[in-house]
Length: 192
Image 1 (cartoon, one colour):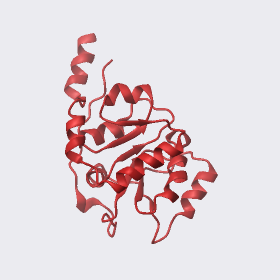
Image 2 (cartoon, rainbow, N blue to C red; image 1 turned 135 degrees about the vertical axis):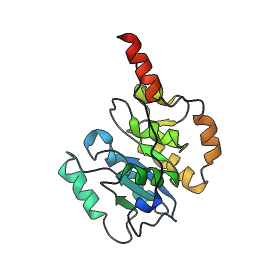
Image 3 (tube, rainbow, N blue to C red; image 1 turned 90 degrees about the horizontal axis):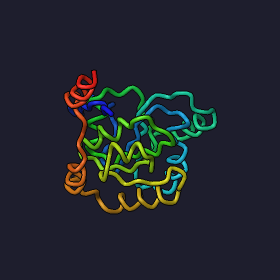
């Protein structure tokens, strides 16, 4: 196994959309909007978390019409769920810096690059309880059943009420080795 390397982007707050309010506690989820990414779970949970924002970073993919209609209904100046498609890597890195956590409720995943990139920035992680995510993230994440709405709501609410300790997250995540491209190619070239 040769894990893909991760080179964290340098955060650039100036590349974020103008007027984006980052003063309210917020969470971020990253990935194309499609059924397997399980955005529906977060949309089910978010009405019960009015004191925090959810930024959905990613383009609309092949999501079903009902999910897209739910997203469209959430638009407006007072929305606490905001889609942010087309952000540059430095903008995503800047957004991650202030997030209470990265939420990754995926139902199926091949590798899980967004959580690895967030772990490289010492961002708290709440992810699906999938073997691949355990393999790449180790003890650096909170693992939840991607079908258990109550557990996601309880865990997110606890983070909103108690400011996340980024130093504790950094300490916990230091146990996880973020794969580098150098280590990736060392493994691959040694197999050849």
